[in-house]
Length: 174
View 1 (cartoon, rainbow, N blue to C red):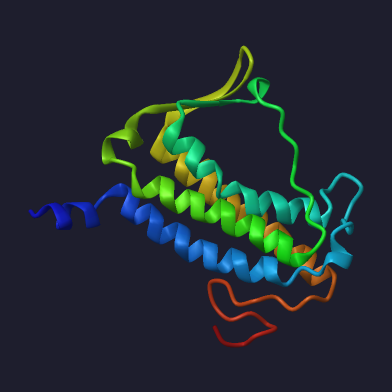
View 2: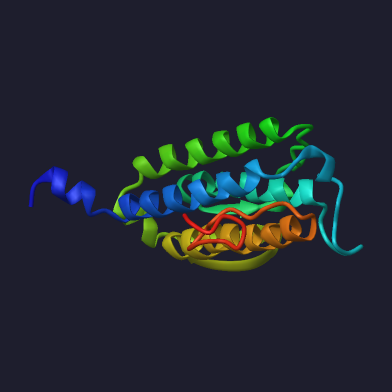
């Protein structure tokens, strides 16, 4: 098998294709969120629409952490959530996170995907699993999960839903 053929059959190449597919859908959802709805939330225990949208946008950045680090330890960094003022700022935040994810994947060898990765908070380890499982579950599935929540927020605010995995009731066609 040629080097080019081997590279095109890598785990990273498959993950890039999936991230690009999901990223296009995520972008469509985020583009629909007007800033006047950023403070809306369906329940007192829920995130605001702006916070949930920002979370969805920034989760793509977890790809770089997964590829380049052996763990994420919450006790070792001071997280400050991005607070967009406009839909354009939200999209720019998403694009930065998304592009960093793709670049990280481009440099990832198949071997790294079987290395252990841990989510921790100081002495507490929440889980340790192979990086490929982290990428599928904690990154990709997590993005899709919260994007689904965000689609309900859109519906509750009478904002038309884009087609995602098939036609939506608002767009009819993909």
